[in-house]
Image 1 (cartoon, each protein chain N blue to C red):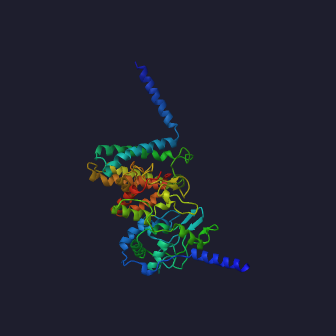
Image 2 (tube, helix red, strand yellow):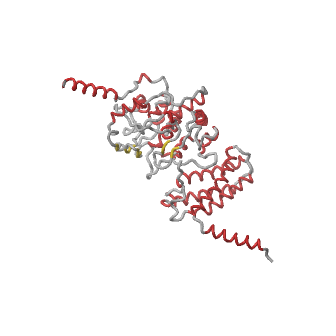
Image 3 (cartoon, each protein chain N blue to C red):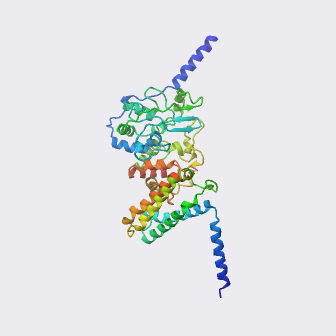
Length: 300
Length: 147
């Protein structure tokens, strides 16, 4: 009897270890693609990397060229505790010396080069849906940026969230590189918009409700969510939205480029930094995002 | 002999201006910004290409901006930081010099646009665009928007 219990215990531990193991891609999974740092700059702004990883200046978010100094250091409060944003500059304290496959595994599988899981405050669950080519280009661009020294402190999380290995289970539930929104259209513009919104742009991370484990509720895709930074709500951006549902594709694209609503009010809150990033994309990419937002299912 | 009606009108006018003077600065600045918003819509629609460019209307909007920008600095006294759903950011009081610099940037851009040749959209675009940039810069730092 005692032996049976011991065997069961061992089996449970082995199963838990297996279920929580990091799953990585190997270098031979990479497509034959020569990374292009110019395309990578567009991926950089689409991905909003600087919004979290640029080192704050005098306690405020970085602006202008300071957005290219990716030393980290910002603190992200959350219901699970406080996340400290790491250095991703090409310095040894950041991602200096990483291989392309290291970078792809971080961005799309949430696994560090040493095999540890990253917390999904780093939106790899969205980046998993970007194209691998875009991710390879992005690394080529970040490698051209200044190397900034300095390491951020460890995250300050409550139990059980502090058990990093447990994230393997979270990934089994929520890490999925298949498309999210059910859209019938074959329009290549909408398809490009999907890659940008569901992938690099990680729009759903703020504009979609989460369940108690912090996973995106797919049925509520882009239908708005409580504001993680406190008061108010992050708005619904589906065609059913009371605020932006009536905006035309042109209105949306103009808002992304210039930061003005159709009433010529200015963009507000956390969206200010996002809009500044979107303003640096190609005209075609902004139009593609707008077309996708018009094509997603309307959710009240 | 002054008509009774005229007397009443003058009195009413005098009373109204007293009422405005005693009004809460949060209400006054809200009204003022609503007016600025309406004026911005006119220029914005033309910049965006939704409505045909009209130099006279653009100038009229700039006049609204000018009036508002000259009054706005006085309308954020101590004690008006909160309440009445104000969207004013605490940064206005924490960093008054920065706020005043942003306000003066707006005034400067308006003055430049008033002095510029506004006859065609091509000519007017840079100056009007510069005014809109100052709107955005000030809002980014000194206004809180809920959504």
